[in-house]
Image (tube, rainbow, N blue to C red; front, side):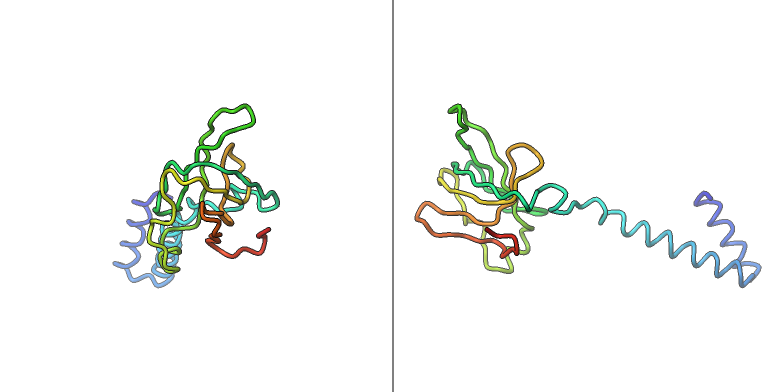
Length: 150
């Protein structure tokens, strides 16, 4: 049923005070509003859809960019592969607001730093979900404590 037909039926029901039709219209409007309001939520992806928590990988590279942003914080790394070529890796983290609540300020990683990252291997090439990072001075950063940390 088209929206205009629903609107017309509901208006007619209210004008004639047909109790059954009014209740039907209220239900239709509630259902339509529920569908409309939940649509943006379905657009968000789960971590499991993009990363394999059963496959922990480690790469060492130079930070080229640190994106302290929503919906996900990202670290871009230049990593040298076995052939000696430089590859760009994208390492994803949780949402910026989660890190702000933990005291992060956006200056945890800086371009030029050589870091080692561990994380869930991405289903896309050269991607990972960060579980921990080893900084140039040897300190370890664990953004979120995960059950699968290894």
